[in-house]
Amino acid sequence: QVQLVESGGGLVQPGGSLRLSCVASTNIFSIYTMGWYRQAPGKQRELVAIFTSAGFTDYADSVKGRFTISRDYAKKAMYLQMNSLKPEDTAVYYCRYASDWGQGTKVTVSS
Image 1 (cartoon, helix red, strand yellow):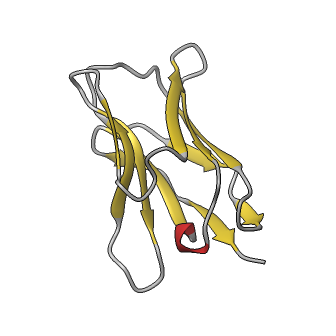
Image 2 (image 1 turned 60 degrees about the vertical axis):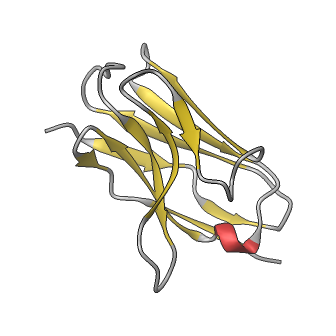
C-alpha cells in the first residue's frame, strides 16, 4: 500500500490560485492511473484531473482551462495547479495513485 500525503489547501478568494501537492511513500510509475478528486459537502466524490495508465491527461469539464495536473517522478509527487478559483471549487481534494488514496486537503474559495 502506498501512503499519499496531500498539502497546499487553504482559504483563497475567488479568482485566486492554489497549488496542491501529493507526495507518495514509494516511487511512482506511469503505468498506474493517478489523479485528483474532490468532494464538496453533501456531494459525491468526483474526478478533477487524471493521468491515465495510457499516458493521457483528462480533466473535468468544470476545471478545463483553469487547473493543470503535473507530476515529478524524482520527487515521487503529483501536483494540481488551480487558477481562477471559484466558490464552487470549494471541496476536500484527494489524490489517488492506483487504488490508494490520500487523506485529503481542504480548499475553500470565499470572499
